[in-house]
Length: 74
Image 1 (cartoon, rainbow, N blue to C red):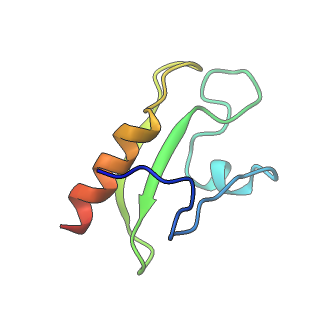
Image 2: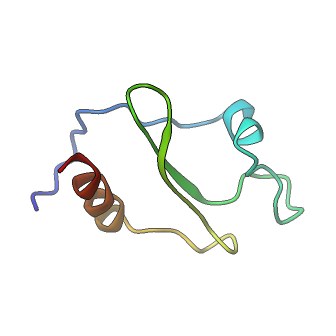
C-alpha cells in the first residue's frame, strides 16, 4: 500500500461541532469535545465503517484507516 499526503477523497474537520453532534460522538466522556472517531462515508452518504475511541487517546492510525478504505473499495 502506498501512503500519500494527498487524499483523493474529502476529509472533514468539524470545527463547528455540528457533525460530531449529529453522529453522536460529541461529549461522550463529559469533556466538552468530540470523542476521537473515524467514519468512512460512501458516495451515497451511508456509513461504510466507523470507529469511535473508548477514551480520548484511543484512535486508529492513518495506516489502519487507509487499510480499511482499501478493503472497502476492493
